[in-house]
Length: 248
Figure 1: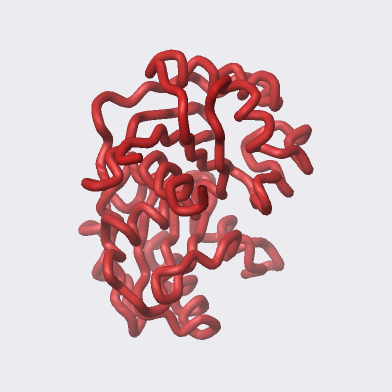
Figure 2: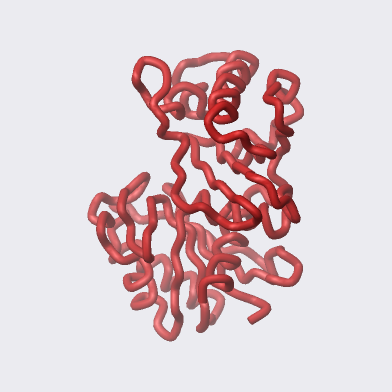
């Protein structure tokens, strides 16, 4: 299939679009449904059904989901209802999207797949780490173009025995009311820590902060290159479709 429906489940919205897998771009408009409150499997399944009906779509669907995902099953619940834990995302959404088969992966991993196939990481065969910077920190790691899933390096224990995302995410910057310059210095410390333990060949920065990369890049100085993501808000949708096409 050259066009697959990609869906990105987020804390505030569930977004979907048809993805042109030859071009690595959306094929037409994006449709968004507010994330239900509470975001239970049944409620989010209703949002998935609404998106598939909007596009009058039946076929392969890729889904990026805010959890550690193994064999299509959610093992954690971040910005989503706790009843998702140990629930099969793929079975729940395939049932909701009648006539379609859904494949699910972690949302940061989906964004990473998009950047590796069509964006800032394209053709890079080294060790690449995509870092999504938002309310928290998500990561996706690749070696020789292959995804190493569910890395969750935003949760490495950091200062004061708290996860790194509590120190240098966008959410931390807003909560602590620090300047972007101070935040960038904190984030640079984090990059150096990751570099010591992983020896990456490339860092790709995604999420909301990537749009402002030029305003703080001078404060980042790890030994390997640091570049902004290219696909921005569409990365999760595109990567979800890529995941479905590669695993089906």
